[in-house]
Image (cartoon, rainbow, N blue to C red; front, side):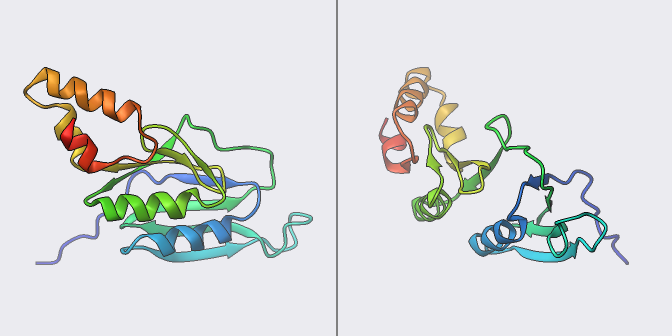
Length: 159
């Protein structure tokens, strides 16, 4: 039996003003199941762009993304973010520290990396804790969450 390779139907496309290649290298270094699939560069067709990334296809934990050096003043905003579900506090801590280097720490697990891209670093247990059968427990978890920057699994469980 020959299984068909599943084609990802929706691919997030990240437009960088400059530095797409650096960002792609950084992101793929953070996640285990990640790789750069291909990089296509500008030639002489666009003045000032020769050698920069026209498209970079890469995977983070098997999810495909594309990036471009667009040389335009578009900026990332918090209106879209990448949510990363973490199994352990160690994973939360590692990703939080690496992604906030040169970026901004936010509230409730949100941050902006050095390239301006927003991320949510969230323990996988959070959904279960917030949807506890006991509405008072869920309320306490939400109250604890609202006071945190980087999320703390132990504190959320104790809420």
